Image (cartoon, rainbow, N blue to C red; front, side, top):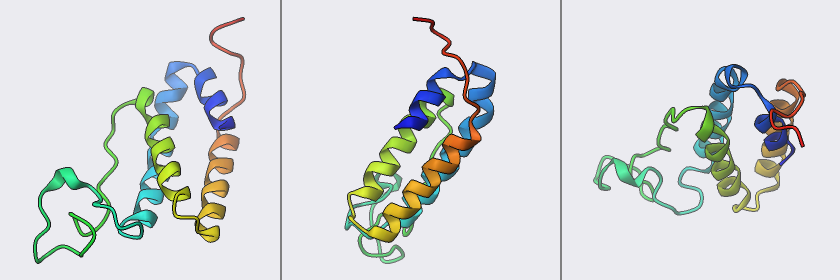
Length: 115
C-alpha cells in the first residue's frame, strides 16, 4: 500500500492530525461491508436479539475506536481487506478512490529513519 509508505514517514504530530482521516475511511468501509458478508459485525458488543438485524450483532457496523495514530493504518488495512473480500467491483472502486484520496492528502516527506 503506497499509503503505508507515506504514513510511516510522517512526523508524529502530522500522524496524529491525519489519524482521524484514516479512521473515517475505515469506518465508511466497515459500514459498507456490514452484514453483506454474513459475518457478525461488532460481535463484542453483545448477543444478537430480536432488535438487531440478522447477520449482525449490532444492527450496523461497530464504531472504529480511536486507538491512536499507531493503530490507524492497521485499522484501515483490516477495513480494506474486509471490503475487498466481497469481490464487489463498485466497492473495490470505492476502496481504490478512498486510498488514493488519503495518500494524496498526506504530504510526501523524507523518511524519519534515514537509510
